[in-house]
Image 1 (cartoon, rainbow, N blue to C red):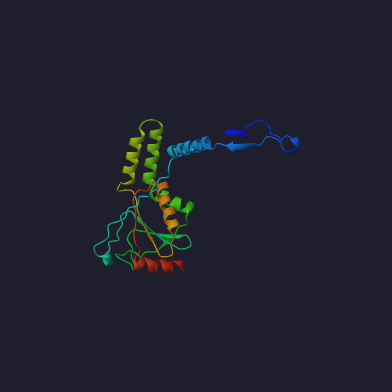
Image 2: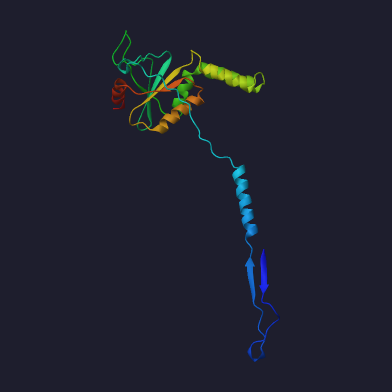
Length: 211
């Protein structure tokens, strides 16, 4: 609150009998303002929601006992290899540097991020996508509740028939591409995937494919 203070006594007389004007001073009391500031600060602290760290679950396979003799056989499996310039290559099944059991050696096929990658994943995960789509219709029509829907969707992603994906990368790949690839997995209802190290054979094949 502002206060006006004046000198005591009536108007005095200066020299030669002239009257002097009253001297006034102002003083602003800041106490209410400080109280209000602390009340507002307390209010915002108590009502604010602090940001929570976001995590992404990634399945890491168990390291083999003998790294030089890994069993790379994948049942209904696909391997993605990330490299520089936002490029990603894939191959299906077991990696073979040379023809084996009458089957040709492994070759890499490039797929571009975006619509091409999304279409590729939806095609490979067709059975699970259709099953979850039917579950969504049942949830909307109130045939099943949200808890049942989530449980059945998780079980569908873990079925034996569902494809399994392995993600590998060379030293030129960027972390953003890994996140983009996993985001596409989530969009396409893929629940079986893992991130592991690239082998020397795969690295050599990658270099040949980039040329």
